[in-house]
Image 1 (cartoon, protein in one colour):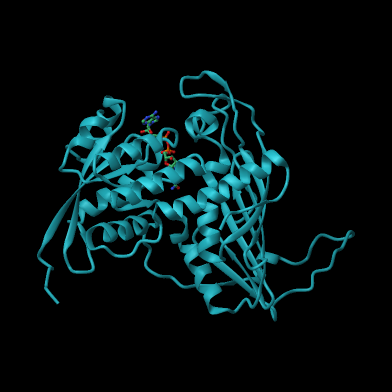
Image 2 (spheres, rainbow, N blue to C red):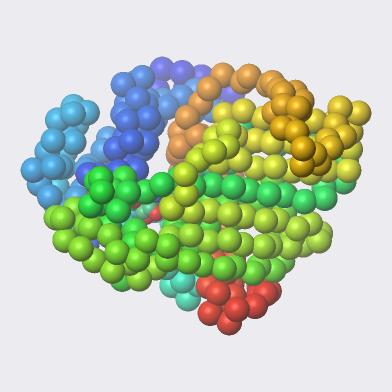
Length: 385
Ligand SMILES: NC(=O)c1ccc[n+]([C@@H]2O[C@H](COP(=O)([O-])OP(=O)(O)OC[C@H]3O[C@@H](n4cnc5c(N)ncnc54)[C@H](O)[C@@H]3O)[C@@H](O)[C@H]2O)c1
C-alpha cells in the first residue's frame, strides 16, 4: 500500500449560514476549525485533508466577526459568486431550513457536492426533487446526522447489540426544555423556528433526530400517530416584535416499528426538566432495561429488578435511580458532529460508503410527512417503506 503519510490535500468548502447558531456552536467551533488547526483530517490512506472554508451569510458585519474569531480569511455575502468559484467544490448548507431546497438545487447546478443540515427539505415532494437532482448530477450528497454518535447513544447501541435486554418490549423517549418567549427573557432559539414560512415547527425540526436515532438503534418505523400543540402562541422576535406562532412547539407521538415494537415519544419546547438529562431514551426488554442520556447509559437486569410497593401512607422508600448499573464503555470522546463530518469527508475524498445521503434524508421526511398527515386527520398513518 502506498505511503501517503506526508501528503496533504486541500478541500474547498462553502459554509452557508456561517453566522448561525449551529454553525458557530458546532460545525465551526468543534469540527472544521479544529481540523484545520490540527493540520487536516487524517484519512484512512494516510493523507491529510485540509478544509479551506469560504464563509457565507447575509450580514457582512457579523460574518467578518465570525471570520476574525476563527482566523479565517475568506468570506462573502454573495451566494452566486461563491457557487461560481471552482476552488470550492463542496457546498455545506446550515442556513435556516426555509429556502434550503432552492439553495441546494443551485449548488448542484453549479456542480457542487452537497452536505446539508437537517431536515433535507420541508416536505416529501421537495425531498424527492433533491434526490432526483442528486442522482442526475452524480455528485456526492449527505445530510447531517449527529445524535446517534453521542456517547450515551453509542453505549446504548453496545448494550442492544450484546442482547442482554432480551426481546425488546417498548421504547420511550423524552426530550425538551423551556424556550423563553423573547419577552420574559431573550429566546434561546431563533424566531424562524416558530414560523411556518421559514421552515419552523418542532416536528420538522426535531423528528429528523428522532427518526435517525430510532432507525439506527431499533429499526424502521411502520406507522405513526402524532398529537401536536402550540403551547406558547405568542412570542417576541430578535427585534422585540411580537408575532404569532403558527407551528407546533410540542409533539407527542406513538410509533410502531416494523417488528411491532411500540415507541412513545414526548418532545416539547415548553417544559421544565425534572429528569436525568435533556434527552432520555428508555428501552424495556424481557430480560432487562436500559436508559441512555446524552453521555451515559444505565441498565437494570431482570435479577436486579425491584418489587416496589404502591404505598399511599408512606413516602417511597426506594431510590429507583440507584438500582441501575452504569453500562460503562468509555471510548475516547469524539464530538458527535465531527464523526458525521469525518464520514462524509471520507466519502468525498476516498469514495468510502456513506449511509446518510439524500435518499436517507427522504426516508426521514416520509416519517415526518406521515406525522403531519396523522395530526391533520387525527389518526394513525402508515409510513411508506
Ligand atoms: N443537527 C442539529 O443538531 C441542529 C441544531 C440546530 C439547527 N440545525 C439546523 O441548522 C439550520 C440552521 O439552524 P440554526 O439554529 O443555526 O439557525 P440560526 O437562525 O441560528 O442561523 C440561521 C443562519 O441562516 C441564515 N439565514 C436566515 N435566513 C436566511 C435566508 N432567508 N437565506 C439565507 N440565509 C438565511 C442566517 O443569517 C444564519 O446564518 C436549520 O436547518 C436547523 O434545522 C441542526
